[in-house]
Image (cartoon, rainbow, N blue to C red; front, side, top):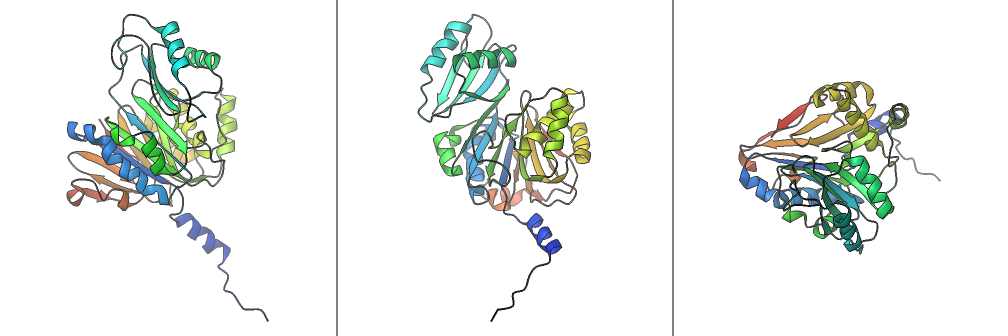
Length: 329
């Protein structure tokens, strides 16, 4: 004898899944005061680790600082080996690029600051020559980000472990964005983790899923762009950066993205001067914003913001569909 089981109609099941909270977590914090800038890591880390229930596979954080002087650049570099010995890279950096003049993070000359298998290199080199030099020194290293203000840390594993290993609580800066990932359409690797970056001082984190990433990818490849992964978020990131390079500002790029990105998404982006949030036309993936005189905080769920000082008096709201929310430094 068979027992009758109620079956959910496909359309209702699909809609329920779209509205489900079970996919990735995003967080962001922009400091409006010197106090919050000094506390950025301490405030942002609990936001990040709180979202582990939404994304236990991997995680990452991008943080923005005062920019280094032109022509210096900051490069975030990743090694597969957690015990990687950065001393040979540091020696080659000093031998090949130490000069007199300019100001890196402190003092004159190229420098490297490492923690486990991540390093931040400050050097007076544009991106292409730096990538060529890095590939010649050690082809197994991966470039995570480039710019004058941004540093990126990301890896696979539990978000709390990632935050501990890279000492997120010690970070300071003007603003940062984070992501905890539950993989749904591509591999679980550090490269597939968020934040994704493109160009200089631009990063993006994403909760949702695009249905046309390969169409976007083919179009962008015809324009000479290259990709590091098959992740749908990378397609969105490189699409928006491509629009920025064409001369439009971020708001203009996002208006075009509303037309060209197919799927459901909440996107949180950061440049050296702003934090920007958008949701798709159906607002399928959750987001909440809290704003006070001292900060703007963004999270997939309110519980990621609940610990913040002054949250009881904050202006709280849920972002509307296809509206662009930007906060400037």
